Amino acid sequence: MQNLDWVVPGIPDEMFERVEKIPMTKEEIRAITISKARLRSGWKVLDIGCGSGSITVEAARLVGDGGKVTGVDRSHDACQLTLRNLERFGVSARAEVVEADAVDYLSRGERFNAIIVGGASEEIEEVISLARRCLLPGGTLVLNAIMLETCTRAVASMRASGFEGVECTEVIVARGMYASQGTAMIARNPVFVISCRVGE
Ligand SMILES: C[S@@+](CC[C@H](N)C(=O)[O-])C[C@H]1O[C@@H](n2cnc3c(N)ncnc32)[C@H](O)[C@@H]1O
Image 1 (cartoon, rainbow, N blue to C red):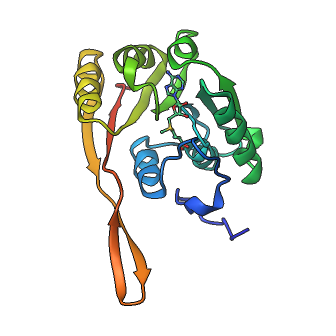
Image 2 (image 1 turned 90 degrees about the vertical axis):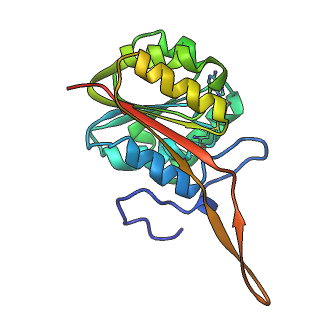
């Protein structure tokens, strides 16, 4: 396996185990999403809709041995894949994976320093309002959305829930594909990264 001595997010996509039909947040989106979460060493992080586990893995690398990441997904196969990717990158001891629906899990009321949401767009208002109650002072919430409607609903809901520093970034990435005559830039789908924080 490629050397992973760096500490900033940026594990190449191809290093993760992938399974057909289980989505994965792509490398550049992942880096921006994690940057907006302002993760600190020792933090407790919740990754809702952990999918292939790429965000769970990167967060587990960043929070260090004193921190902990909980990946939650309603798909059994996604949970199993996340567990395998945690193992693959040697960070299983800093993480747990729970098979559950986002709203059900957040309703348990466990407290976190940061919550990252990659799924659950249908019930985004409820997820945001529950996340507000689960976040510790100074905590951060970051959501990824592909639909404009989800983005506007999320921004309105964050403001209504009393979050500070609500911001939305649309990330449009094009990657070079090398062909015999040169390099064609192939666009990926735009993704909204919506973030906010709880006051100290
Ligand atoms: C785009 S993927 C997230 C990818 C993930 N961030 C990664 O790095 O691989 C969205 C995931 O959210 C999960 N999901 C969607 N709605 C959910 C809900 N209501 N509760 C729990 N998980 C949900 C899906 O099963 C899917 O695995």
